[in-house]
Image (spheres, rainbow, N blue to C red):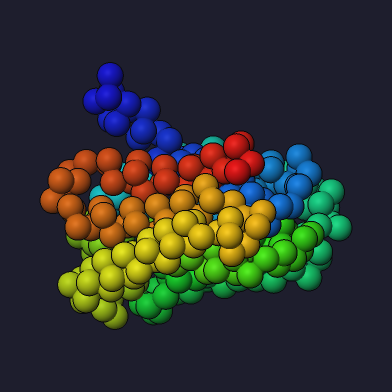
Length: 284
């Protein structure tokens, strides 16, 4: 059963970026649990839908660029189903714009425009292909701003713990993306899509991920241990989830040999973001 899930069900979840959509829902839930914001239903729909549009557009452009001989299953899938996915992406983009209009008071036009500019700048630089450093950081920045911007706009920084957890979330997101780049370095190199690892050696990048992963984990763990005394009303489970967000990328790289020729590292790496639903559901 597990073998069937990993080889068939997970294949479609992964190539269609549905795992990212589930992860961003968990990230949104984490942001609301940390900030205490209450978001409209439209926001919960806009969050995964807009992320799906950005990721699908990115894969469509990559698939078109590499062509039918792509060795990356996501790019190959988007090349083979370019028309239908382009149509669905266009429809989803229109729906996202409508939902954004409904949320205008919470998103604020300037903030929405800023995120859109960052997203298209990222896609433009990726398509240009001459910038070999920073894709992981730009994706992490857009992802983090997209998730946290709305809740923070409504309630602001209600506690000194909020910016710390926000930064650690951003750190965990960056580490996760770099971990994916390291795990898929050979695959990306075959398609000429090398970003961070074009500027840093894999060994150096791995060492920094391991160090920052441990540091982020320990900081979040200490925060979780003392949050009720130091910041009454703070969420212990949110700090614990952020600790795992930082820890998982380092743990995967530490035992990378166990994940070779397997999608388990992707399931684990994306799945940890879904854990953000726990503090939101428990409200603790």
